[in-house]
Image 1 (tube, rainbow, N blue to C red):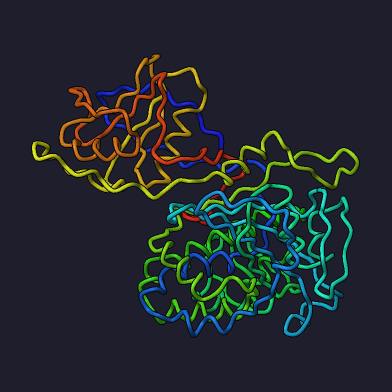
Image 2: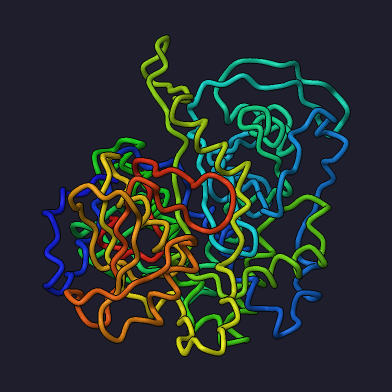
Length: 477
């Protein structure tokens, strides 16, 4: 994401809150109902206290895929969890009211990566028109589909979820643990179980064909109206798929935000109604058992919308067809590597406080910190600030200073405990008081020795078009 260059900071004045980042670039292809799969994973973390899992477990349709994945798979390198989310456009059964197309296709493929300990979640979308090499796949009946080159969503059409699973693993070398598939049928019921989802439209909409009638601005949609909103193509935007993707992306973020709201998570009845509707709408692999879901739920307790981000695999034009794209490997590989090697644990517990030390570190949410780059490395302060924000710190300023040899953590009057917390996240840099600092504030000055945050694995790089689930819906419409 691009930000306006910040002027050199004046340390004796109070840091001002940063401007909201502007969303730019190509937003990833994701259909609105995929938010159901993501939310059932995240909201499930609240159910460990209520013991409802056993009743919900029997509502999920499961499919055996182990015999179709083969033996040449990427190794599992850490305790993160990777779940492949797929949106099916099947017209069978209750979906028949949406048309009579034969077969089913995957219009959406998203890899949901959950960091060890539930420190954060990132959804990585694979555009459906990406031209890729697909491996040999087995169909449910035993027939074999040969390896082929084509659009990535053909893998689902060829041999179902297992083929998409094999394809994504072969392209990314990321070990996938489970899959979840969603179709049209349960979408309306799930949205209603949430009490509706907030959207934002730039002008009044009157589309009789889609049975869609909306006023301008922010509003809450339910049931059929919500489905019409995510499916319509020509009455909103310029009719392009890219415009529709942006709208559906904002819808997905809004669902996650609503589903992880504290009012929702502290109400057992509302939580159960939502998940009951959602589990009836999904299909999963047979290894996603009750015990696995309980373990996953336990690890996700406390997950908030602010810790959920969405990106798309970086792409570039496919030279043989202007309507297709291909992966930009130079940008995509660092993203895949960061996911493969994500060993980041939750924020570590504070070390025991020595008897002579009176300061007990406070939670990251109580730390107001400014981050300033004293090196020639472009964007270092912003990347560090984003990482601190993901860990719960309140970043109030990002800027540059004159070259610094050493990284320092400085603090103003009354901010000793806040600086102690910053030192836990940035080990090796003992905090020091600064007379010119604003009372209550912490300042991170990044020098030539860097500012590596605690925890292993490379940081997930920023990707153009990224959006977070805690943003205001109108800022993403």
